[in-house]
Every structure is written in structure tokens, then in C-alpha cells.
Amino acid sequence: MILALLAITLISAGALSVVYSMTKDAIEQSKGAKTVDALGKVLPGFDNNPAADTVTVTANNLPVKVYTAKKGNAPVGYAVESITRQGYSGNIRLMVGFLPDGEIYNIRVLEHNETPGLGSKIADEDNPVLLSFKGKSPAGLVMKVTRDGGDIDAITASTISSRAYTDAVERAFTAFREVALGEEIIAPQAADFLNEVLPPYKSYLTVNYDKNTLYRAKNAEDEEVGTAVESTVEGYGGPIRLLVGFLPDGTVNDIAVVEQMETPGFGAEIADAGNPLARSFIGRNPSEMKLTFRSESGEVDALSGSSITSQAYVDAVRDAYRAFVEYQEKTGSDE
Image (cartoon, rainbow, N blue to C red; front, side):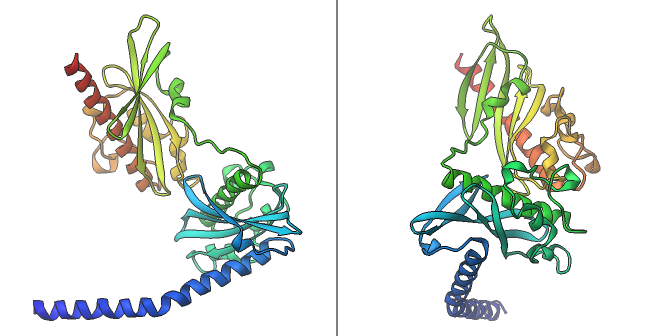
């Protein structure tokens, strides 16, 4: 039986390999044709080959490709092939066309797996989300759907898909600013949040330990007042970076979210001051807590409807505390 199963497995794998090799070129040609078609629809008239004038940059932690369209050697527009991981059913890829001043000329959906008849409407021409952007510059918009206090109209019964679409456009605008306008896009720095997570301090020392960065703060009398630890974990929509401030005895003073890509209105609430997760930790020592959710008889309050993000947050705090304790023990033994 084992030999028979092994033979079947080998034959199946071989068949899949043959099918893939036969269809690989056709799939790539189809994607290429879709890209060329989208370029023509999201840009004003051009006489160069934008597909041959491209640059790939990282925008909000994901790679995006920027195409430059020219007429008579002068740029007439920029198309950005952007992506978001926040779709209801997976990744969504857009082609966003910008005029040189940042105004959005048009947008086309290249790829999605959203629910037919609901989220799939993001691919419809003149859908509400597209109309919220078309002819406008993101610089003058609050890049959130109206339900979240922004300027973007969502598709009825498809708020998650609409939020994801908005996230992809925002990422495209970041790439446009870097390539077309020459702006230096600087990622948030954990040190910018030290005042939020530590008691008042006079100076701090930055230490790299294992895969974490620690900021050891002291007062004017050279006494240690706390240590902030930067920790990064993978969330639902991408990396989550936390800065956890510990008092010398290991008590959590406060927590700041340095960077996150979670779903607006759901997991993104980890960045809100006083969110349930942060409240669960502030004023407590993680070693004295049962680090599971209350639904599992633990002591941590999760974000409603965001179990993956909540677990990532807990993992980040646990990792930060581990680094804090290990470094304290290391420096103590050295002394």
C-alpha cells in the first residue's frame, strides 16, 4: 500500500509539473497583456513604452512598481502597480494612474478574489470607491472610508474590500511621491515614541540585543527609570512593530504601535490609545499574567473580530518582555 501511494504521489507531482510548465508562459503573457491594457486606461496619452521605464520601490512595507509615461520625453503621468493584503478574500492588485501633480487620472483592478456581487464590485468602472479618488489628489483626502471618518465612499455591504482598495491607493500615492516628486519617505522610528511609553527621562542608551532594540532610559541622577523594547511580529496584514515600555521591575508602563498594516476598523485599532489589549498589560508584569485571552480563561482582552491581530500583539509583548528580562540578567551577571 505504501509503495502504491508513493507511486500515485510521484505520478501526480509529475503531472502537475508538466501542466505548470505548459501553462506558465501563457499565464505570464496574460498578466503582461493585462498590465499593458491597464496602463492605457489609467494614463493620459503617451508615446513611450511605460513598461520599459519602470522602477520598483517599497511603500508601506510592500514592493510596488512605478511606470513613467512620457510624451515628447516629458512625463505626462505615472502608473503605480500597487497591492494590499487587506482584501476580504486575499490580496488585491490595482493600477493607479497619477498626473504629474498627484491628481488621480484613473484606477483599474488587476487582480482580486473578492466575493462576487459584493466586494467584486471594486473592479466595476465608476464604483463608489473609484469615484471618491478620480480627479482628486490623495494629499487632499482623509484616506479612510466614510464609516471610519474619512472621505472615501465604500461599496454597499463591502466595507472590508473598500478599505483594502483605499489601502492600495494610499500605498500607490506613497510610491508616486517618492519616484515622481523625489520625496524621501521615512519609516516611523521607534525612538520617536519613547516619551509615550516611558516615564520622564534625561537620556537613553540604544542597545541591540538578539533581534530586538532596547532603549535604556535614565534620569538626571543617572538612575534607570525604564527600558523600552522594540518588537516586530507578523500580523494579519503584515508586520506589526510595537514599542513596549517597562519599569525597572518589569511592569509595563505603556505600549505604542510604531507601525502596522492591519485592517482599518478591525485590527488597526491596536494603534488606538487605550485599546483593550494595551489596557490588559499596562500596570502589570507579564510574568505574573496568564497570557491568553479571556475567552480561553486568560487575562488578556482581545480586539473584537481581530483574533489574528490580537494574538500577534500578545506575541510581540511576550517577545519584548523576554528580551527585557534576558538583557537585565545579562548585564547583571556582567556587573
